[in-house]
Length: 421
Ligand SMILES: CC(C)=CCC/C(C)=C/CC/C(C)=C/COP(=O)(O)OP(=O)(O)O
Ligand SMILES: [Zn+2]
Image 1 (cartoon, rainbow, N blue to C red):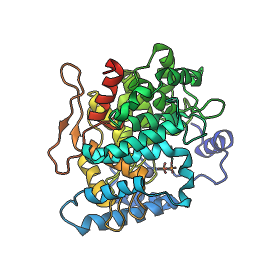
Image 2: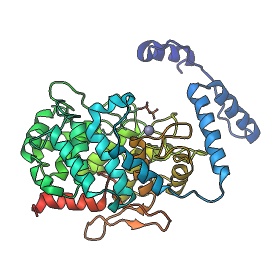
Image 3: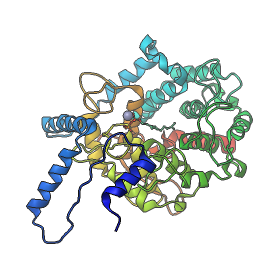
């Protein structure tokens, strides 16, 4: 048998490059130990591995529990407050401290418009739809691909956000007919890498599952998904599933994370290749991201719950449910986390967790997560998307979990590019 101390030394020297000494502990697995003793052991191990994150988690738990105790009945979603918050994003200039969003202008449009439409299909006015399209076509007069703002290089993430935002605008002023599918297709092909991934930007830019998802979402919405574009993409994605069951950003060598996992699972769904991965370890991983007593979802092992993973992990779980693999998260518990812990009367908008400020990104993904808790996803016998509603109050628009868009908008947009009505 290998001596545990020399094994640790070997791992440390050859694989980890650690600066801190690892803790070695021999745990007895003999049967017949009394339960009391086991509990004591678990407590002492937990104390020994106290870190900045475990301390922060204790604080989050205390805040969530206090909110859960505050009101016996589940709080309602503050629709009117949210509408005001979202409308104000369209009518006010952003303050200078938000300058970093200059490279994410299509994202801001998508988050805001999508949140309004998930709240209520009628909340996005025709005036706003026109302004969104005008802004996007000012970024790319030729109809795509799109950069993050005027004069910026076309990027997969901003083109994904722009196309998603346009999908919400109901072909107002005929803008859908001005989208340049051919230019977008040629550009997507130029970003393709030999390993099956997509570079996010010509010349510069990283290659990971986010880029794959953006490329496939754009191409499938616009009906330009060809075999050439899809070549080796499944291999790239399959290689991103880690030993934990979730997906990292790149094949063979990345930590499983909710954001990358959503991108991989949604991409595999678009490619009809969910059967190529280990679904049961993926489902176990998704379940393990939901914590008690917080009830929300975290993005990776031993990290904190955050409202946006209601969609990144909740959406991956909804896609698995849609394709008949069963349930892997507790939707009613997630709903509780969202309604009790992600909204506050002090500030409009939805947030990551108690103690953080709301923002447009979290508002969109928390709302998408809440929408997921209101439906059971599945297909009808003739293979049509056929969600069933769960009877709970606060009906949001039913969403397509693969695209993060209301079903109605997804259907109108994709029909347009299939039949050119
Ligand atoms: C379509 C598209 C572009 C999707 C983006 C998906 C997404 C949210 C990716 C997240 C990437 C990442 C490593 C976050 C870690 O943040 P952190 O370390 O601050 O958070 P954590 O502690 O919760 O892991
Ligand atoms: Zn977040």
